[in-house]
Length: 323
Image (tube, rainbow, N blue to C red; front, side, top):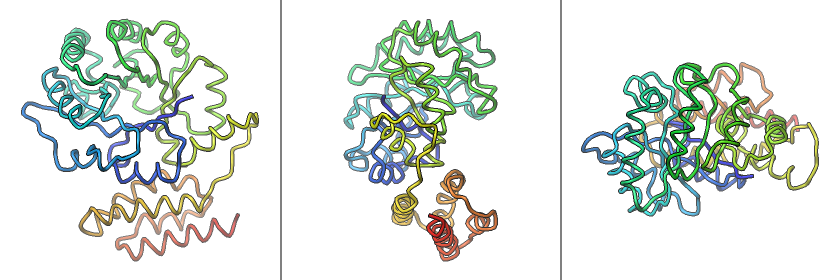
């Protein structure tokens, strides 16, 4: 089973990816946060730094593009291909209103004729890279998926990554896993499942239910516990069928945290910028820590790095006492 790390805007940039890959080896491929295209668009310094090969050495990385214009997509894809990338991912899954109102991301799924023309352009115009697609199953209704899948089947998609929610559901409610079996049966392209697999038990149940699945993309579950993929793969390789979740290696999380923290301090100016980035990380990571709310608040309310350091040290000291 291949496991991928989903792109998470503002979090899974190259500093995060390098640290994660250093300490956790269970991920087969990382996807970058999307690069938005428009006419005469050049890469920003942030975007360029994120996808530079020297910032991603030894890591399998796929850059992602958000676009609804064929010419703009092709231009950006050529830049990425020249940097040595062999695969480009098209984002048709972002449910954000600011994206959808521009008919991009999941919003593009509502414009099927325009999407058809767009796909024709990019698959004809991009010669040096394969194109994969990350998509939702529709804009307003699950029933849209049959037509969309038939559309994707007309093109040589390197891999179709399916998040089985419609745009208006955002991340609320359950995913429509019931469509996955039909998707496995009817897709002419390789598939990857994405959506709401946060624990080993959920992953076990999913794989038992859909044994033909070849790849899974994880997102928020890895942000909560960065070692989720490693722990699940180790259990699969051992052949132990148990519903118990594995233990959390807080020492490794600390090392991972420190490398991310040091990386942000190295490339960012000002304490506030570093604190903002680290608090984004803790929004998810804190759910792996059995600690009191007052300790969490100290991280959230820290206004200086010295305050942040004390709060984080207290958290790790507490969990180490519990082990």
